Amino acid sequence: MKHLLTLAVFSLLTISMYGQANEKATDETEKPTPTSVQGPIMTLESLTVNYGDIKQGSDPLRTVSFTNTGTEPLVISNAKGSCGCTVPTWPREPIAPGESAVIEIRYDTKRLGGINKTVKLTTNDETGTYVLRVKGNITAKTEEKGLPEKEGIFGEPDN
Image (cartoon, rainbow, N blue to C red; front, side, top):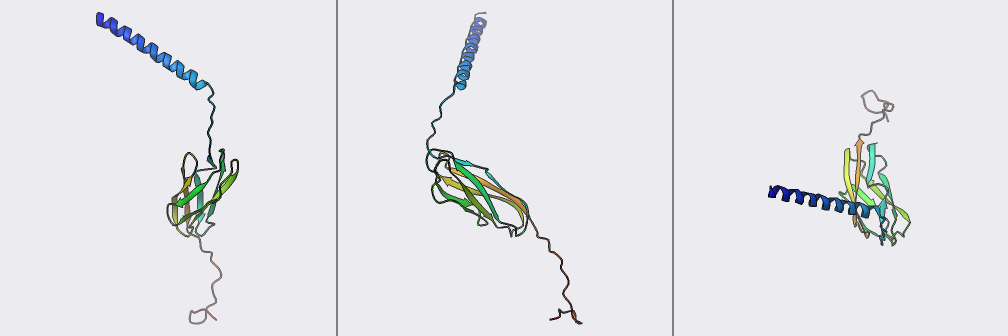
């Protein structure tokens, strides 16, 4: 009986402490905490560059917009595609706080099939690196049938 009473008291104390800890955490999370994040912050329009379904040889250029929502100039020190068929171009000059800019991505649209590549951006903000996913699908260009060439008697084109 003594052990049962000890177990009951221990259980009540544990539950009581757990309840107080949760109440304290709830109170702390409800209080607004001032955020004083200093430095550059890259806010990208999207982390996905979607080519969609396109025909072979279509426009290879897509863009991703971003804004420096931080308090100091944002610098993109490097942008690298996962292969030679994905080529990024990025602003080399610092992007001032509040300003926006564009990263251009060119994919070799002569290749057929699915696109599943990445572009890795290296910046001076707190995150440091961002990975853009490049996706889509390239289908074969359909040949338009034109008028047949005028053939001579022997099946060769007449010149």
